[in-house]
Image (cartoon, rainbow, N blue to C red; front, side):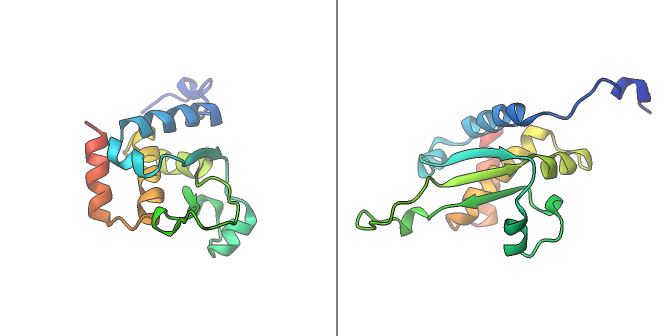
Amino acid sequence: MVATSEWRDAYAPDIATFETLARQAWQRLPGSFRELCEDVVIRVEDFAEDDVLDELELESPYDLMGLYQGVSRPEKSVSDGAPRGPDLVVLYRRAILDEWANGDDSLGEIIAHVLIHEVGHHFGFSDEDMERIETNGRR
């Protein structure tokens, strides 16, 4: 058992540390995957906004670790005149920390998993495709 005094000066990683971990996880992913997402911006926030939770019909902000917002690559068009912001993956720090505290995976593994799944589902990748991407990213 870990003595309580060992945790007295410990702090949860802050947003800047999460951003660093996300960049590191992103760089470990296969180049072919990253190329599909060349314009994606990764942002870290503590929790999802209430309107996001309401839209997704989630009761707790701890139920959402990440979210992809944007237009899929196949749906983008040069002739689409409507200005849009960049495609965005938001990582929700507090929900990810909660998952990390209750599981066996490293924080970096969870962040990579969330990144892959948010972008992957948006592009229509199967769970098997995403698992393969994750496995290749750990090498």
